[in-house]
Amino acid sequence: MEQGPPPVNSMSVGVYVHLPFCRTHCTYCAFAISTDLSAQDRYTEALVREIAAGEDARGHTESIYFGGGTPSRTSIANLARVVSALGERFEIDRDAEFSMEANPEDITPESLAAWRALGVNRLSIGVQSFHDIELMPLGRIHGAKQARESVALAVSSGVRTNLDLILGLPGQTAASFGETLDTAVSLGAGHLSLYMLDLEEKSPLHVQVTRKRVTLPEDDLVSDLYVGAIAPLAAAGLHQYEISNFARRGEECRHNLRYWTRGEYHGFGLGAHSLVGDRRFANTRDIHRYIELAPDASDFSETLGVDEMRRESLFLGLRQTSGMLYRDFKEVSGQEGAAWIERGLRGGWLRRTDDRVALTPEGFLVSNELISQLF
Ligand code: SF4
Image (tube, rainbow, N blue to C red; front, side, top):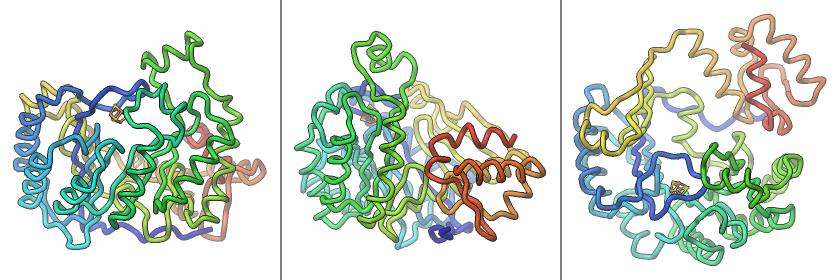
């Protein structure tokens, strides 16, 4: 069993910035977004106020993540204002990972050059599929051709590149999914995030599915595709390191590793979450309230107890292919843990070495259900 990527630096903090603007609202999306681009300047002002004001939001950072929404829809001038505000608040490591989410339709030689000039060194591109017929029901703006061209452009610019892909799309087959993966690999992406389509009730696509206007692939097929993708991706140099994430060695997402190891992070912007010490808090998801209230736009806060933190560590540890140290697992799970491990080894959903315990790909498919048996 792998020991996993290098541990995150506990002396540093992660920085997340939410940039919510999108051209249209995709039919499956449940993120905090806005299609009202006219609010962009006021939103950026609120964001800068929040970054400047946070008393405990400071320190050394090795990872910045601009998520959304579609950050690539935010103007370069506004991105520059945010980057400058962060530079005044945080001591940004010269080798910091600086990720930004981008959609294929926004990627041009000019935009790439401008983002890179701001310090962005990793792009996470919302490709979802390399088949037009699968993109159409999602309400995406881009088509497969544009996605291929944009990814090729990004990779050739030298920026590290992640592609978001979705499993379980309407019309997806084993052959079409295989082609999507082959295309992603052949374009040279160093990182893939492979998410299962997870439809919020009442999302337009969910309504279409319940009215039987759109058909999703059978769950068994989706499970087979997921498990079957792991070995070919590893053979192509993209090893799995978390339930949904695959990377070339050294290209694992440092920022997300911080989340999965319960490292501290500060989130700014609409709906953004923060974890500081034993305190977790989040901003409102209502953009008008956020603009009005920032820097005091928090609408959720909790203080975690020791047991809660341990349970979270277990849950997050078991999402990673390197799993967790057996002694830590035992400390959190107690007597029930030993029986759980026995069941897992017999059922093929768990692996164990002398000092570590981890879920197998079959275990990842039902990880929430399995882990909930422990508490
Ligand atoms: S572009 Fe991304 S964030 Fe925006 S609506 Fe579509 S899925 Fe949601």
